[in-house]
Image 1 (cartoon, helix red, strand yellow):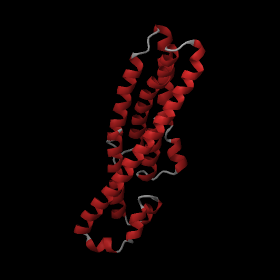
Image 2 (cartoon, one colour):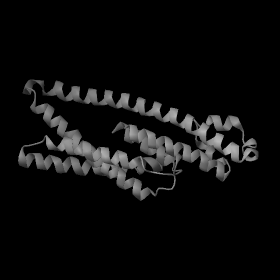
Image 3 (cartoon, rainbow, N blue to C red):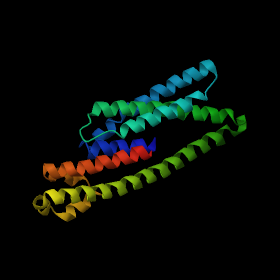
Amino acid sequence: MFGAIIMLPLYLQIIQGNSATSSGLKLIPLMLGILTFTVTSGRMITKTGKYKIYPVVGTVIMSLGIFLMSTAKVDTPYLQIAIFAVIIGGGLGLCMQTIVIALQNAVDFKDLGIATSSNTFFRTLGGAFGTAVFGTVFSNQVSKNLKENFTTFAEVNPGELAAIDTGLIESLRTNTESIATLPENIQLIILEAFSSSFHTVFLFA
């Protein structure tokens, strides 16, 4: 969940050029997926009394959504990204609340508060570790892909690259706002490097 919430807005901002506000709003399909499947699984659990199947199916659905996100490219339309986000959210929705129910059923009534708060704590801890790992993988891949792409470009078009400030290219790893100020062919090289990095992160996830 934390990986998706961090990486999806980054993809929308860097690759598709959305503002921070716009990319945040475009996470609504992810939240709709979570909400819809949480409510649906809750009703089904109330009706049947069985809940083991939902985290299993949810993990499969979420993995599928994350894998689909790894296929997103520079020119992938937002509608397609939104569908992938709904799938990820649906998988999350089947897992999140169901795990809390399972946990509460596994402890005595007097320990409900401890069990629920422990679940929240460990989920947050896992999210912090996950976000750090995904961020590290992404950062390393961006550096590697930028270097490879510019090396290849320099071999074919040495004159064009000579006119670009190398310090500006180096700064792209931490500040992507300057991408829009570069020539179109250079922008494409950079966006392809970032897009490939997102592929790696989502496949790793």
